[in-house]
Length: 90
Image (tube, rainbow, N blue to C red; front, top):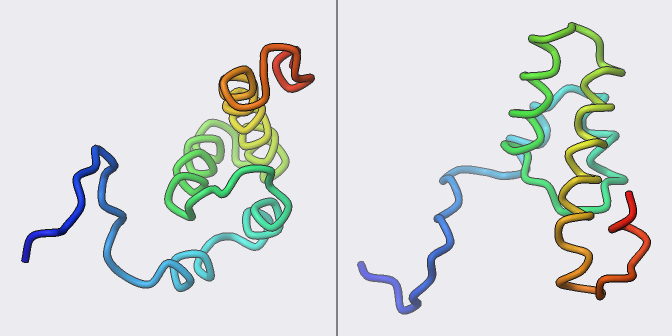
């Protein structure tokens, strides 16, 4: 069946998003609960796994997630809130 919308956004994966979230490591779920951005479980897990492969330390992985989120906020802040938003100064 064809969808009745035209968008360049990729379709989200099939399946239960809550179940994917529930399978995440506890530390990652806690970080996501207070994240500034609405991360998908898949995106957050990708960063987590890359950081853990580099150095198997949850604190290191959480620092990598925080850095990724800060980069995204700094990138989007001028477009959303204007060029003088504090997130841009990061």
